[in-house]
Image (cartoon, rainbow, N blue to C red; front, side):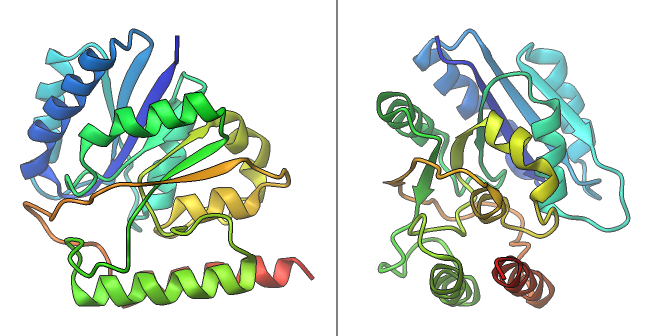
Length: 236
């Protein structure tokens, strides 16, 4: 039986949380997962997320949440906290804004198991502009992917994806090598690993954001560029 921890970093996603957990619970039941947990790491939201998370936890035994209280919010650090809290050997990461549809968990999980992969990435087809992304996010993702693949080597066609499944041992082995900050934990994990990972891409359809707003901004883009250059120069 597969053992799975789902880790979701969130910030001000109060309007999406109830539906998100409901859909994930439905997938858990369809897959008949007994060794399963859902962990949400809240980056000290300023909306009503904490109240909602508390109510959800009271109703769902498989659910836990943690508040990351820090003046500087950071998606990667939220993910790392979730990885440390996860009790199972396989971890699925996804966003909390419902752009990563829980219905694709089964697809990623089956592919992961059958291929005995180290990492399976839920990839976006960036040839199609209608991905639920703003023009800024679309073009910044496209440019950053080109830069990452050129400077660091191609390991997946979408290193900017936030929807992926991996073996926890990769994190444990390479924890001290991680860049550890920023907004794209997948690239950090796969480009920090000293082992040759067995990575596979699986195309999925991303939904449009229903509520809230994107966290992408100039500061985030600069942090990503610094990450790529840091990893590039460390090779020498």
